[in-house]
Length: 292
Ligand SMILES: [Fe+2]
Ligand SMILES: [Fe+2]
Image (tube, rainbow, N blue to C red; front, side, top):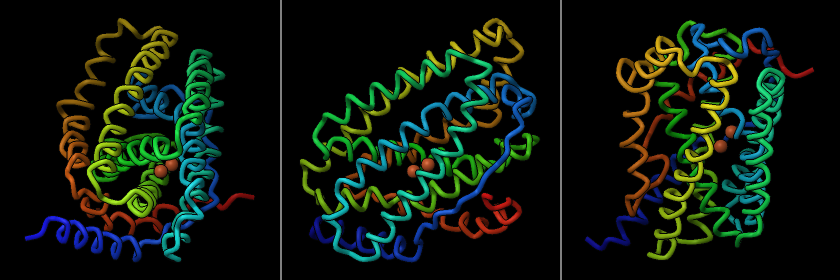
């Protein structure tokens, strides 16, 4: 079989799946309880602060994604993809706004977290000097990363089990919307870059670089937050965190395979077909009050 025919078939199927899933911008507020910022997940400071550390990256990161996709907006002629891009921008803007409020609670308690945000902001400002295609490559890499994290969060009930309900809803909302729009930036990339060898190398190189840069900031940031909490030598806390993340609930080991799928030549985000989670959106979000 002609390999390019296979790729275009898969891509066509994936586009069809995406056409059926048009993301929706939802204006929702969460009123997070400040007193639980450090222990909202199962009372574990290590677990809660790990997820809080991820939250530091969202507002600045998501603005970077919006700008990267926006630069290619006028190259999109497919009306469905145009609508999806508008919804993608709307969703990421709402995520940024809610995580900004979330992060304010964290920054008030842990000043180091605010320093990390300033560092990431400065880094991303520098990355804006790169050619637009490199910024889009970084965006689709990090969207892949958030999509597989979101899938794991939605598939494994133990991740948010016994979590403070408002924090749990915020994370579920973000995970559902990340799932809903997971292919939008990727389809923009496909449309403007195509499926040639150069595009493949730029796309996969983007994931390698984004992974290295992200964890080389996130791990020291997390340790700084835990140090500020005075929990660096709390062995019981660490044991719980590692059991939850690697063994008992093997959150991270389960990410490896879907992470590596990105290196398949014909990869498309909807190859991981988890559309069934989107059926939950209205029931999960229905109980949240709309923004005033
Ligand atoms: Fe987001
Ligand atoms: Fe996203």
